[in-house]
Amino acid sequence: MELWEPRISMKKLTIIGTGYGWENAPHGDDLEVWGITYLPTLRKDVNNVIDMNVYDDLRWGRFEQERNERVIDWCEENDVPYICLDNYPIDEIEKHFCVDYFSNTVDYALALGIYKGFKEIHLYGVNVTHDSEYAYQKPGIDFWCGVAIGRGIKVVIPGKKSAIMKTYNGLMYGYDRKQKQQLTKRLLKRIMDRQKPIPIIPVKNEEE
Image (cartoon, rainbow, N blue to C red; front, side, top):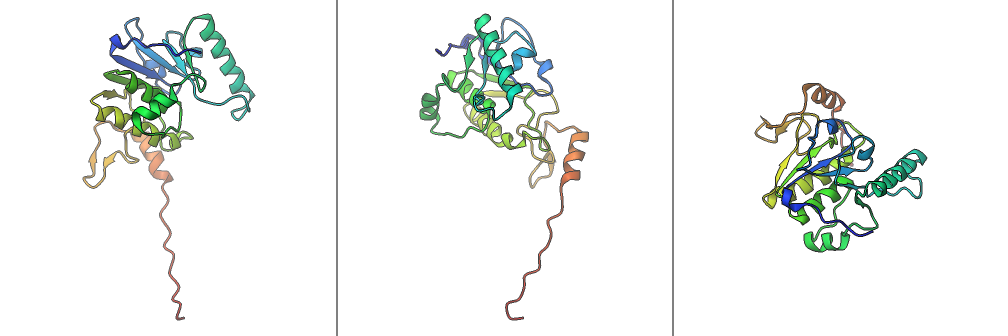
């Protein structure tokens, strides 16, 4: 598969995951929209689909594999580029950034968007909340958002559900000042309720 060329003239890239909030992403022909994994099963107006998961060995199960096959078929039928492990420009990306830190598909999408020259990146449906199964993906997404910001790219994360670029308690360390984008009070309470005190283990005196 040949890699498509995005409409850089749009300047603003919208990356849409499949988590809560994907439905709030804007529509319009003037948008460059990249769908993560099976987004086309939820909305059709995407300029390309990116999925860096492995399905052949059924590590995600038969259902996920079959859904991925349907997404690929849809992309082919509708002439929508499908980016995967086979055609992602990983060598160019690694050489450009001198980094190989990728922990999920959104990381790859962010890196590609930065590399292609977008001036603004919006993330919808990508939450990676601290108490979810996707929490391990948060550091990677935080990192690539930081790379974008460091290059002068505006990063926008609408909504209150996402934990991207947010501390676990919504406070700036040391200053204890609330971050401008806050976690919802309900979610914050769930996170804090899960925190367990660190047990104090007495050190045994070797002379005893």
